Image 1 (tube, rainbow, N blue to C red):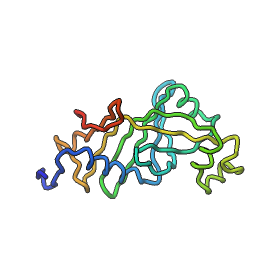
Image 2: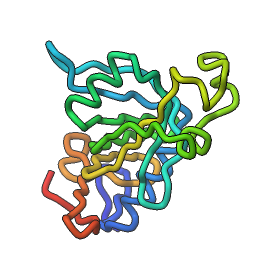
Image 3: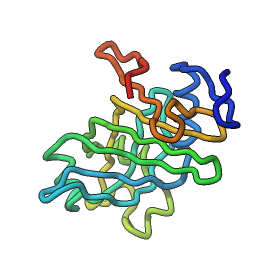
Image 4: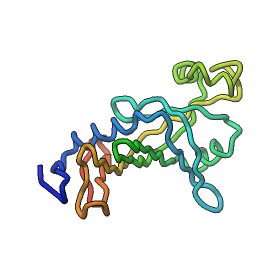
Length: 169
């Protein structure tokens, strides 16, 4: 570790940075940012926790503007914040709609019945699957604070073989 302005910072490590991203991505809500006509559009969503490959799933209506924008671009940005840790993670993802019954049942939260009364079989419910290809993070508590301190984020990109590597900020 190196010392920087009173905060000890981890040296760059893919494994450490991925662990930090996973911890921050446990937040209950995140912003889902889509590419909309006229500019980006952000909405709060309640995703499932990421799987081992950091793939994220959440529910939406197939008739929403969000769904139309995802279908059009095939991409989203998910932005997570854990204020108590001084942490943020921004995840750029390829995104797709899952409309099959198995996926809808697997990725449905029971209290979502407030939005979709028929549950996972509600025709107004689909699952969005987000596969990350780039992650930017900053975490003061876990000391992922690349130089210059406070002005840069740690950045990971996934190569074509699926492996994560550290990228220039």
